[in-house]
Image (cartoon, rainbow, N blue to C red; front, side, top):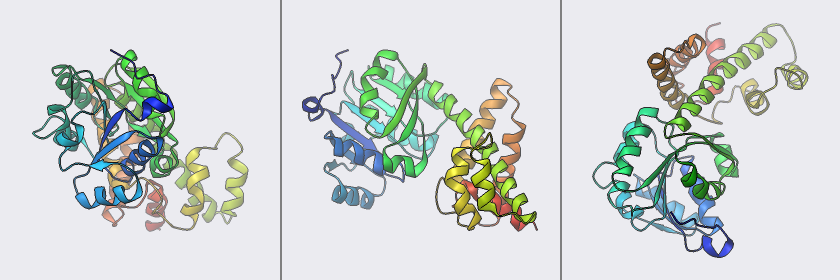
Length: 302
């Protein structure tokens, strides 16, 4: 396998396809284009691809298969397992046209079983595959500061890593195919507990008559501090929940975590409880609110 040897001159010759221009994929593909890669995009709603072309240099294609044709690397960032299959292994999926030796990288948060399934489909076509879910949310994608958790072959990973660094601050190989998705499950399990704890803390502070801003200023400098606390407390106090990863998507991710937990006999009591709380948020119309809306659920029960 010939390495790309990423330099300013070589970047211009690397052909990249990006499938899925949602809140994450849109800026991720943009960073690749701004770095100088030859980017062709595909999105299920063509209007989004048309808008992307107004913002960034590149091309668009009417199907995933045509977008991936002749690409050296194909990135995918869509919604769930079914969406991944539809743009990779289904008719007009990228695998049907990707050339031997090229690399498919899936940034979707999906199941480990799907990663293994896509890996086998790629192997049959002499295509390399990396499952590479990301963390950092829309803000991280826009600022090029995502964290990428990868599963795949080490040699393939080393080739793809500098390209993924176009939109990421940390890109780490966690193990073989599927390890990236398993690591993302750990990430979501931890976030679920953190956001519920932060919500309860802010709720308690308000009930106790404390200045919530002062409370956060003090405790964020100690053992209670977290990314969620620093980046979400202010909007939570203002009762604003349009600033991050949606509850609907978090429930999708937690279902993946709980399903995998049952498979490997891992007890996840807090994760299961918080998943129920998010179901209650959905029931009061908060499916598109960000995950910090667990605080709004607490207040709704007063």
